[in-house]
Length: 548
Image 1 (cartoon, rainbow, N blue to C red):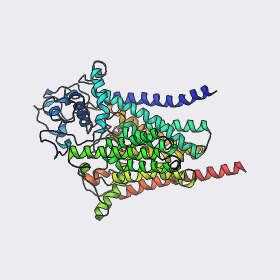
Image 2: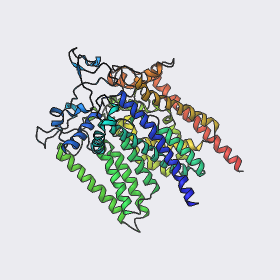
Image 3: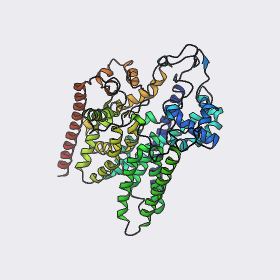
């Protein structure tokens, strides 16, 4: 009997992992074939990884000026080849071959804006301004991909296997994220009440739905720290709420190392890491009197890891913290009326912007307020909601005061990817609470259908474009939304007219915003959540009557 139960326990998680892996690998191959060379911040993470693998250091001066390591992922240039019209390059400038299907990125790769300050280092040394976490994560896989270039490299124009191997690594991490989400959602739904079969079924459905839609699927094939960060947050938070670590010194050290790794990926994750560390420390109250050693190991591990990180930062950059000028600096909401207005628009744009809004590209996140309502209403779930809010709110507010809160060249919801596991907790609780309602199921089917349509547009829209067109995964801060344009070319709906281009109108062009359209968007979201709340009250009344 025990072996049968063990097999059943393994089947669902295994199926989720392999379904997610298969979907992500398909997306990964599509991204490799149609977004070569890697753009945005991606090539700079790769350049540091190459320096680690080939030189055993992180000084990239020779990698740019002598070795030209970027040629590993740029196709061979030809005189008079294709170039991006927006760059206005002269006709004789080297460009891309005529049969090239990727992105017409500027060549050669410019290091200037991505080299960090180095007052403590010799002037001839070049160090990336980007944190060391991602290069350390991908360096071994880059080396493996280089060795396997004869097979993996066939996916690229250059024939080098380093970048494709790193993309596949991100795909594997995204599949692990799907598995961790399943395990986390199971814990949440168990707290909401219900049979084990129902919990497994809904947890599997929700984990796969969120994993295979934006923003997770959009970042699962890109060399950004978003997917590794989301995986760490999910793994840490699940272990905290299950509280299987506070009585074990080894597990306490492991959780502390996971939290430290989060900061190593990027310093903007520091508020998130601090919140997770705080709720982890609160869990030690249950075991502290009987055995204080796990708590001591946890605190010491975090302190030592933090000290090493700060010393490394100071040695390399002459400062303990990353420059506040990154992301264009910060907006301080209370400084002026204009700053407060910008902050409010950032809050709206993070969810509803035409190009980068989370809810626009995944409507399932629109029922977040309903999920919060359900968790507040149910005493058994209320403490879990507080645990969600402690790490989530400080990080969200940090992102909202970025001047460039949308993340520039990248898919929707870039800076929100790391906290999607925390956002999914109340959404899952809310969906599960009204799962017996036919009306609620219909609403969630429509929302999930919209999410999958946008996911399809973001990934497979890459295959139907010319090299000079903006890939559907990316957007400029000006101009139309690429994924919406792709959808508009297939259905007779003007999505641009129905959505709010916050970035274009306010941040870039400083034009008046369509206030009426903003209020209509918020009103629709309010109506949706009100309907869901009414459905939950009706479901509760029906359950109470049947129990009499």
